[in-house]
Image (cartoon, rainbow, N blue to C red; front, side, top):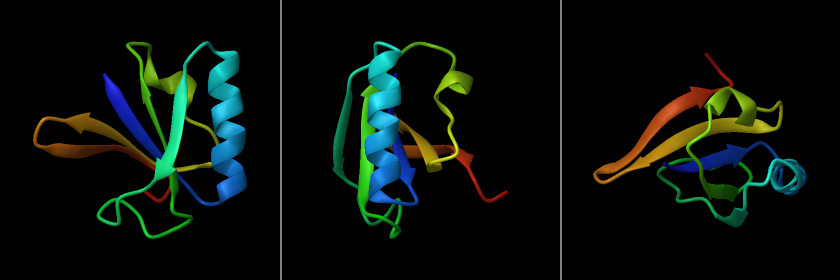
Length: 79
């Protein structure tokens, strides 16, 4: 499955990429589509079949699952 994570800060996105690399998951940092977030502007796109609970960190603002008809919000730091 493919995911996009958005962040509060650019440094949070870079920190998250390093965290995911330690877990063996390649992450591509890229601009976040405006429809998903207007915060820091940098997001992380990655593919994994692992349990998503391992991928939530304090730096993440939102986590989306990429589907054929768009992105579905899986997690938001603001409930």
